[in-house]
Image 1 (spheres, rainbow, N blue to C red):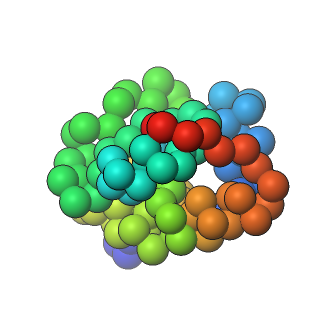
Image 2: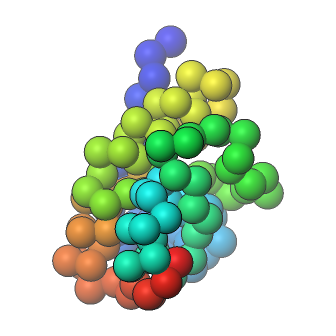
Length: 108
C-alpha cells in the first residue's frame, strides 16, 4: 500500500470547512501562527508532530495546511504511517489561501 496525499485547492478546503466536512490542521510553528493564521482549525506544529495530538475530527475529514504546502504533505504521510487515514492537504498553503482571496486572522 502506497501512501498518497491528495491536493485540495484553497476554495475546496474553504467550502469543505464551511460545509462542516473538513477539519483544518495547521502544522506551522506557533510564531508563524501568531503572525497570521487560518480563521479556523487546530494547530499541531510539525516540529513536535504527534498524530495523536490531532483532535477527534468527529466524522470530518482532516486536511493538513502549512505555509506553502510542503510541511502539510510531510504531516499527512506521518499520520498515514501512524495508521490514520488523513490523506488530504491544502496545496499552496496559506500563501495560496491568501492568493485565492480567502480570510486570515492575526494571533492564532
